[in-house]
Image (cartoon, rainbow, N blue to C red):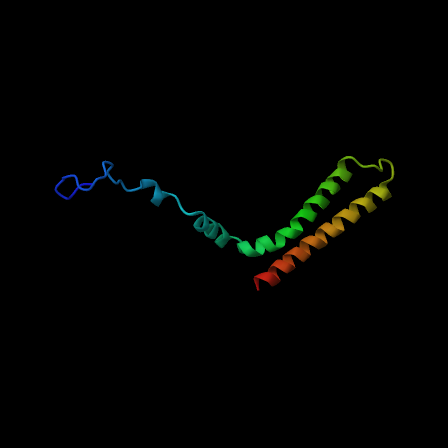
Length: 106
């Protein structure tokens, strides 16, 4: 360290330099709060409703599977029923998830 007139003080041979990066990098929670301010729901609500996202991904996967690799190639009625049995729960789960998030958000 050096005094105002430039003389070395103390036992440290390394001068203290201010951390120039510290002011440039925002803490993670500040970044999340900034992004979440633009979001409809806060972090806790998104974590609460994320439980419903896994079944929606699974249903979506099997719906796409049925659309592209149908086990019912010649029977249109069976295809429509199979896709309907996937799409209806997917839509209802999406609506339920949204309503639950609105209730949790208060």
